[in-house]
Length: 321
Image (cartoon, rainbow, N blue to C red):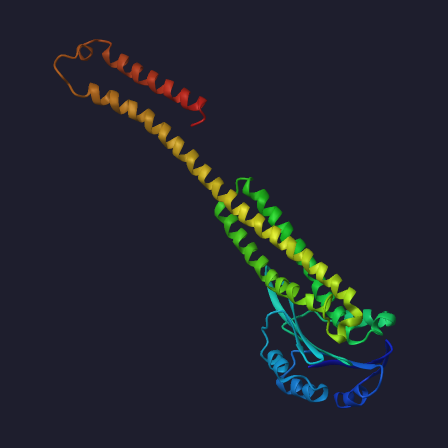
């Protein structure tokens, strides 16, 4: 679906265009066309391919969707895939922005994403001195907007990890903690799959041999690269902390099991003494003087109680009970 189609000249908006009028403006000097679409159909992409002369492989990737974040060159044009990540309930949902960039055009097609990019256009139009750089600056603005939306998600993941760490030592169910840690790890991997490939790819847009369309915006792409590197570093740190937390959680479970085993062993020792005494006095040999003593029974009970009480005190002192 077409959202808007606008022509710009020297950083200023010229006019809103119908699709059929795109080719007329592409022929003008110092003019570029910025088209935004959402969930574009194959027919709409075919129409845009005819207007802009898009490479067939890039169009095929956009039609297929579910692409890995990447930046590909096709002659003097670029095809860029940026992943969007949105929080929907307790889940992270991946979307995609496919961006076609040429010397005098930018075409973006957003898929499976509820976040619109109207704010990007408004920001660019407020800065005509930057928009004068043309399609390269628009590409930067779109990528920067998508990357900036990763930061709140990263902060939310850090907060969730801190809460789980507190619960590990608060006596809550360790099984629940492990389940939540693995769920958090899955979210981190979803976000990392959006960040890491783009971090590797964006190096093509600053330093060294840079595509001509981005030559005047290298410092801006370097800024996006820095943001991605920062996010990627935080995600690596969260992932390492999750691994440590899982090990700590498992250690806590082992300690709890050890405590239970010590209690069971202590009570087993106490009842083992009772069993030993009862076994000895229950043999009923003829020559057992205590069996015929008037005080034999209470003395036997006293001896059994004394030994058990002594063991109980020793185990309590050793914190086994």
